[in-house]
Length: 85
Image (cartoon, rainbow, N blue to C red; front, side):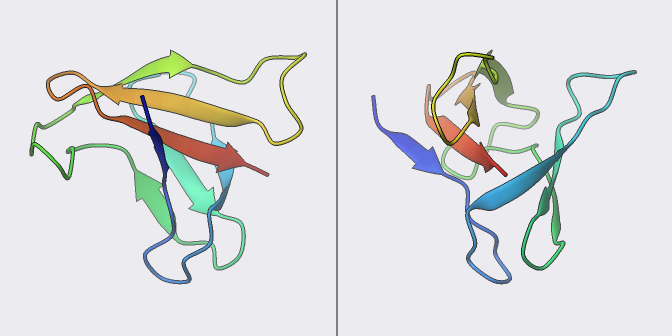
C-alpha cells in the first residue's frame, strides 16, 4: 500500500513537529517546522469520513533515519504519513 506524505498547505514542506496531547490521544496536532502552520487530523479528504484516522504505526526507538507516524482511514483504508523533524 502506498503512503501519501502530508504536506503543508501554506509552504509545501513535509516536515512536522509533533504536539502531544496526553489527555486525548485521538486529537492529533502537528506544526509545520518551516512556517509553523498547525494541522489537526480530522476528516479524510478522499472519502469525507469524519474522525477517520487511526494511528497504525508510531515512532520506534530503532526506526529509520527520518521517523514518521502512519495513520489509516477507517473506511477507505488510505494511509498517510507525517514526517517528524
